[in-house]
Image (cartoon, rainbow, N blue to C red; front, side, top):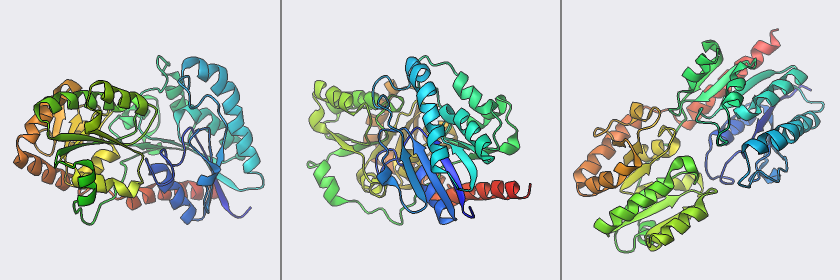
Length: 393
C-alpha cells in the first residue's frame, strides 16, 4: 500500500459531453493528480459515463442508474425513494470494493448531493475529506428544499474547493459556518490560443451567404436560456435577415430547442452543432461576430472566458457576479433580462466599430486570467498539503 489513492464520487462523467468534449475542470484535475503520482478511482452514476473513459492513473467506475437519464431524475420522489436509499449505498459499496488493499489518502465528493457519502467514506478509510463544488447555483430538483445543499457545509470536511463562477460560493460557505481557512475559492482557468485566424472553410459551411454569426456555447439545459436566445434571434432575423445563429453544445433540451426553431420557421438559419472537442471551440469563436451568454446563474463561465480571450464581443445576462467581469459598454454588453437581447444584437450589428472595440477590451480584461495549468496546480498543491498534514499526525 505504498501508492496514494484518491476516491472521487460524482453524479457526472469526467467530461460531460464525451471524451475530449464539454467541461474540462474535472478531467484536467484528475489528469494532473495522476501525473503527480495519485491513483484516482472515479465513481459516478451518470448515464453518460463509461469505464472506457479510464486511462493510466484514472479508473472510472459506473453505477447503473436507470432513472438518471429520465425526466424524473433529481425530482423529489427520485431523491428520497431511489437516490438516497439505493444509489448512496452503491457508492459506498463500490468505493470499499475498488479501494481494497489500497492506501486511500483522500475522499473527494464532486457534488453537495454526495457530501454525506463522502463523509462516511472518509471515516471508513480514515482519510482526509474534500468537497469540490463547481459553484453553488441552485438545487437541481424543482421545489427541492435547500437542506441537502446546506447540510453539505455542516458536515466536518477538511477542505472545500469551490469554483468562483459568480454564484457567491465563498459567502454561502461562510454563512453555513465554514472556517475561511478551509475554503479554496478558485476561478476556472482558460486556454489561450496563440493566434485566432478565421476558419474560412468553417465560415463558408455555416454562412454560405456571408451572414453575420451569433454564437452560443453551452450545455443545452434550462439554466442556460438557449430557448430565449432562439426567440430573440427570431425577432432579429426579421429586421436583419443576413444573420445566422450557431449553437454549440448538447443536452436534454436539444430536441425541444430544435422543435422551437422549426415552429418559428427559422430552422434553416440556426445550426445545432452538438458537442465538439474542447480544442475545436476556438474554430467557432474565430468566425463569430457576437457571443451570447444568458446563463441564469452567472456568466463567469468558461465559454464566456474563451470568447473574451478570442477578442469577441460578449452579450451577457446580469446574474450573480457577471458585472464583476463584464462592464457594460466597456468590454461587453450586459442586459438585465432576455427581453433586451434583441435590441442589444441589433445595436451591435449596426455598429461594427463598437463590436471591435468591445472585443479588444474584453481580450485585455481576460489576459490576466489564470491558465488551466495554473488552476490545476493550485488544486494539486492544496491536496498535497492535505496529504502532508495527514502523514505528520
